[in-house]
Each structure stands twice: as structure tokens, then as C-alpha cells.
Image (cartoon, helix red, strand yellow):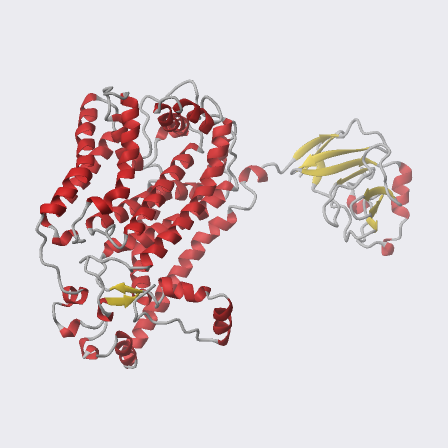
Length: 431
Length: 188
């Protein structure tokens, strides 16, 4: 599942050969993220965010295991156990802030990863499965993040659980029984909290499993690249190790510095102060919003205010789910054979319009449900669907793309032989 | 056409570059290693007792209702503590044992407070594997030496709660304590 010129794994020691004959795990690693995986040589920093997503998944799992050692999933004790972690447990405040901000950063890197894929057409053949598995990971992340946010059992946790499970009550007939079944009661309480904790612990490992499938399916065709031109020969690639391990390592250091700055200097900047009030089933906070990473979807949910054949509530919920499920069909909605946005002048403009549109949705989703924001959400939600269902199919039909380079190396080297060696080598050595 | 690997190999043989790359490589990996250790430390230390557990360090016990020959079980740091009012026979039995015969040589006087030799206060945690020995309750088995008997693996303690027979290596542990009055003991 690699290019013909991929370096074969050759164990250097007797022990290495002994292990390779019995359990070729080092061989698997070598071929996946070692010298045995040839990667296009022209990847830009957009391609660092896949590895970063994996790093944040790891951070979440490690800090989460520590937190679970102290957390009580009891309606009476959950809030206090969080405060106990913050005040009494050694380094508990750090674990918790690393975990809550780790969730935000996980979404930041995954959103950049997704938009990188959208711009460079990484979802197109032969990588449709990579894209769809990525969406599965994203859906699992949303479920995990939502259930994790419920666990502290503060006001936002409680009313978040009430509202999100309330989505299901929008469906006629079966909706309300499903909601009650999901909660194990008529309102969020002990049963809901315990099952959310159980699933919040389980799903990250399911995500890790799907991540393996995601990488596996990626490594069948190999990584895409900023030109969107397929790899043609060895000159187009570099071995993953040491070239991309070094680049990923350096960029991870840079990004984790940013993360550490937030964890240590603004740990509550991305949170909501109402969640430091213990859950009160009898009083809803005046302005209830989900975490920032759900705001665009929250705006789509609230954009539907008029009953039209179906009740407005059902439209909102359907549209919200559809906004993500739609992305599963993206490889077949965008029919342009050119992958990279660099060579698609019309697509490129609409791509940036989509970014602005999602930013507007996010802004509206985080704002109170006032007429101005609702009206804005309606326009932005309409464009969101139009972008994928109307604009992309039409653009891919009528757009005239720019000429593509003949190969990756041609686009990188500008025909200069002196640049044929990896960066860092003196030109003399490359002759 | 030379492959990249060949170019690299050829280049690596030149003197200065290899050393420069090695330095960068070692410096980067060591720096990452130091960072990993710095992150691992709080994640490991989070498992040690938190502040609220350490705050349970002392407990007060009212001993006014314990008649000679009786014992009570109380709790300190979530561990059982035996408080026993020894009879004069039990005191003399403990003092009659030659120190040289003991596995963990200690006199009764060393295990009690001066002037309060009848108050034997020990942890109720067998020094073998941590079971709670019998002998505090009325009619419980006090072992061959009239002190405490651990039913888990058959350790016998005498009336000074010293190990006399069985697998336990040490006498029952005497916690730090002080008489705040004639009838109140503060443990810890």
C-alpha cells in the first residue's frame, strides 16, 4: 500500500529480526510514520493539523484518565468533585484546565484540518473514504465533547443536556419516548449523568479506532498535496521520517506553546462562567449557549422560526443534522477533476465566502436569540446549504481551471536542478 | 540520477554538516524529553493523597467509658485504631516477657505514655498484610498471648500488641498521640 520506491523495512539488529518474524509491529510503524512512507515533498503547514489532531486526542485521553480517577458521576457529588479536583488534588487544576482547553484546541486543529481538506479537494477520488471516516470521527468528537461538558454538572452542563436531548423530542411520535430513553428519566438526572460519563470514557477509544481506519485509508493512495497533482515518481516524495516527523515535531512544539499559554494564562477564556454555578433543575440561565465549537450548528438550529408543513422545531433539528450529513456527499457534489483550490479561481472565491459564512453562523450561534441575529443566521444558513448543493455542482461544471503543473517536483523546483536536494543541503552536494 | 538517500549519504561524509545535524537532532530530542518529563510529573503526582485527605491528620477520642480489660475501635486517616485499657494482670504479663525473646523488641513502657501504661493505643492494622486483628470486641479471639489475633494468616499479638507468633514482621504500629486531658486522646 505504498509507492514502489518506498524504502523496505530492514531490521538492524538480531532482536529486531526476531521480533519482525513474529510480530511485525515495528515494520507497521516504519511503513506508516517512518522512513517507509513516502510523502509528497510540497506539503505546506496545512498538512500539520492531522498529526496535531492525533496529539490532542492523546492529550485528552491522558488528562481524562487522570480526571476520571477523581471524578464522581453522581448528581449530588459531581460538581463538588470537580471543585475538589481544582482545589485539593495535586496538579488537579492543571489536569482539568488541560482537558477543558484541550477539547477546544482539539476542535481548532480539526476545523483547520477539515477546511484544509475542503480547499485542497482532499475529499475527492481516490480519498473519499478518508474524508468520510474523518466525518465519522468529527461526529464522535461532537458527541464526546457534549457529554464531557455535561459532567461537571453546572448550570450550562445541565441545561446543555436538557436542550441537546430535547433535539430528539422534535421528531413526531417517537421523539419524546427516545428522549426519555436517552435520559433514563424525564429530565437530566443521575441516570443521564452516569451514562454520559460511561460513554464519555468509551467514545475517545472508539475515535482512536476510527483514526486508525482514517490513516489506513489515507495510506492506500498516499497523502494529497497542495497542487492536487498525483505523485508520479520518487522525485515527488520524501520519506515521512525524518522529513515530516521533524516538521510535525517543530510545528507541534509551536502549537502546544499556544495551547499552554491558554491553559496557564486564560484557562476560562473559552468557557462559560455560568458553569461554575451548580446545576439547578428549576432555573435556566438567561443566556444559554453551547461551547464555541458548536455555535455554527446552534445558529442553524435557531434559524428556523416558522412552521412550514413541518413544525419549525423539527426543521431546525433536521437542518442541523443535515448540515453535517451533507458533507458525506461532498465527493460527489464537487465533480471538478481539479483538486486544489489554487488552480480553481471561481471555487477559491466561494471557498472563502464559505469560511466567512461559517464565521457569521458561529458569531450568531454565540449571540442571544434576538431578531437581528436570527435574521443573519437565516441568510447564513441558507448560503451554507446553497454552497454545497448549488454552488459547488455549478462551479465544478462551468469553471475553467488554471493549467496544472506536470508534476509535484516541477511545481516545487521551478526547473532548477540546484534545488533538487532537500532543504539544508548545500547546492554543491546536490550536483 | 542519484537518489536523495545517496545524496544525503554523500553529504553526510563531509565533516561539518554531520556534526551540526547531530547536534540539532540531539538538542531537539533532549528538549522534547525534558518537556515530556515536566508534563509527566504532575500527572504522576496527582495520584498521591490530595489536600483534603492530608487534612484528616488528627482525630480526638473520648476514653472515659472504657473500663479496664475493654478495648474500642476508632478510626484515624480511615484506618482502624485500637484503644485498650489494660488490666494490671495484662500489664505485668507484658512486662514479664524477656525483651530478647521478641521479634520486634520493645517494652510496654516504650509503647505507652509515662504514667498511662494502662492505655495501649495502636493501629488496628496487622503488620503482615493489613487485616484488622480480632481482640477488641467482647468474646473475640485474643490469640495465644491474650492481646490480638489476626484471623487472616494467624498472627498472635500479646497484651502490649507485640508480635509473638505468626507471619507478621512487626508489632502493631503505635501512632503519634497525646492526652489532651485525662479522658481525651488526640491521635495524629
